[in-house]
Length: 296
Ligand code: HEC
Image (tube, rainbow, N blue to C red; front, side, top):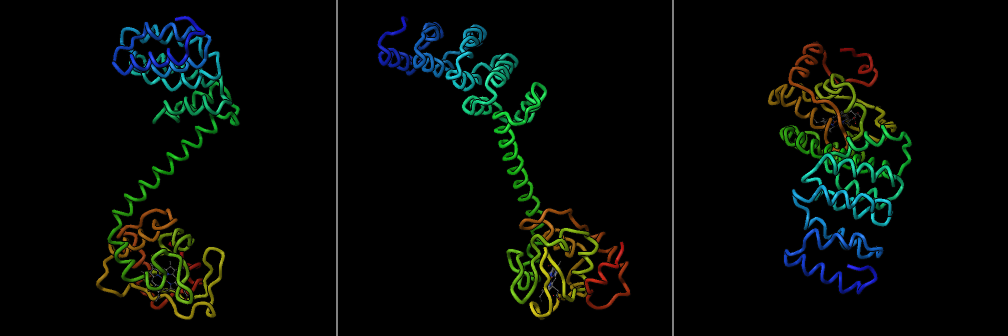
């Protein structure tokens, strides 16, 4: 196929053959040698339909010289999964070469990254071994993708965790929510927030002590002091409620430590039992000063 021919006609023929499943590597080869970039790009897009076990090595060799052209590099990266199916090692090396050749080109970066699903961290490590510059565009894009993956994984784990704490959620709804709010943000003149509260996510024994025995303010939560003027009532303990087992209390505590924006370790029935035992002679609500003197 000569370059400079009828471009639209050639492209039409190529895709007609492809549509008939009649396109072959030998039809595409001449396109790749054309100095018309549009034709080369079209041929590259069609390559996945012609790759076979028999020709993948020859195709890869024919692709390598095209990597010198920055406009074609993203097309090369996008078609590599087709080669990867037959020769993961060679395709992987070529991908890494593309990344190293154009580390600051956003199009190449995104095309390369689209190949990686689940191998992003390994690939970043390979790039780091090659070049320690962390400002390279491809590294920044990879970091973003990895961050996104981490956040999705955390959200998934949290959803699963909260499913296991459904009894805690139920008990929270029945006992705590009227004062602290369904969203844990507290309710004006009723109670301070549990979301982002250091009392909730901090020491689990201290938290158990508050919930078992109650609390009387003033108390500072997340940088704000709640005093008598702001909140008149006090926090009732649930330690004397015989309907609630240590396991139930542990579920409530584990739930509030992991609901909303909170992420803290779980509390077990044994933890609750230990706090009860330690404070068995105690009566009445704690003050903040008393809580601060407690040691477990
Ligand atoms: C009758 C309203 C009320 C109920 C019900 C209630 N609390 Fe409270 N809670 C308060 C008040 C009021 C304070 C602050 C103390 C004060 O101002 O005297 C507080 C403080 C707290 C604190 C420490 C401060 C903070 O915001 O982190 C925690 C932890 C807490 N409550 C957890 C719970 C849990 C868990 C439940 C359910 C088992 C619950 N509370 C039920 C009113 C309530």
